[in-house]
Structures are given as C-alpha cells and as structure tokens.
Length: 188
Image (cartoon, one colour):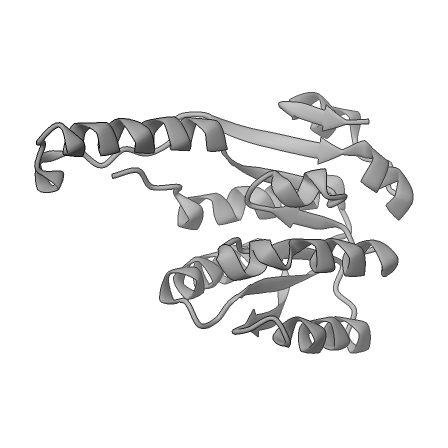
C-alpha cells in the first residue's frame, strides 16, 4: 500500500496559492463529487481554506458535461484562483480546466504535474515516479507470494512544487522570487 496523502497536502497547496497571490480571498475547488475519496479530500481542502480565512466556491462535478456548469458558475461568480482535486475524471478533463482558467486569467494549483505541463500555473504533490516505483515494488512482492495484509502502508517522502512561469506571464502574474526558488522544477 502506497498512499498519496491528498488530505494532508490541501493546506500546503492553499498556502502556496496565498504565497503566489497575497490578496487571495476566494478559491474555487473543483473535484469529482461522485467519488467518496475525492469528496473527503475536497472537504479537507475546504476546511483548510476556512482556517486560512478563504471563501470557498464549491464546484463538484460527476461527469464531463458538469465541467461546463462549473465554468459557467466561475464566470458568474469569479474566484481568485482554482484548486483542482485530481482523479481520473478531473485529470481527463484537465486541458479544459487549464484552457478555461487561462482564458479567464485565473491562477491554478493542482495535485500533480500533468495540468501544469499543459499550461496550468502550479502543482504541489508527491513525486509521481516515486509512487509508481513503490507501487511496482508492492506488486512484485505480492506476485512473489507476500500477503497484501502483511505489507506495510507507505507514504511518499518527496514532494514536488512545479511552477509554470510561462503561464504566470500569460496570467500577468509576477510570482515572488522566494516562491520560485522553492520550486523543484520551473517551466520557463
């Protein structure tokens, strides 16, 4: 068992957003409301936002068509930024989210790097290659006869901050040098 610590990282992502946008007061949270695990991660992020004094715009989606409704809601009631909780549904629609955010000049933070490579602003989360390597290790152990119940639960040990400066420039943002210096990778 490998876990990504999605719940525990919500506050850190919001702190990074606040570092990037000191005037941040309202954040839209986009997540798959049909998935209980993602809903629990959303609730954790919502609580972290409230503790930071941020207003939350709730945008649960259940299918691809729901993204259009979420975009319409953000057009009507504009947030300062978007935080997307990642799962198969949201990741498959990440390019739509990134395109919407960039056209509306909304900063974004994601849980993993693919949306940032597609033009999103930032991501913070476990190093995906490390998770894959550890998952492969556990699969190999199980195939060799180990009982899954006997295997320990592991949590990631390395987290990556990825910043897309091209996206920042397109959004008209000048990110603090201290934030950029903390990044594990910067897309220029």
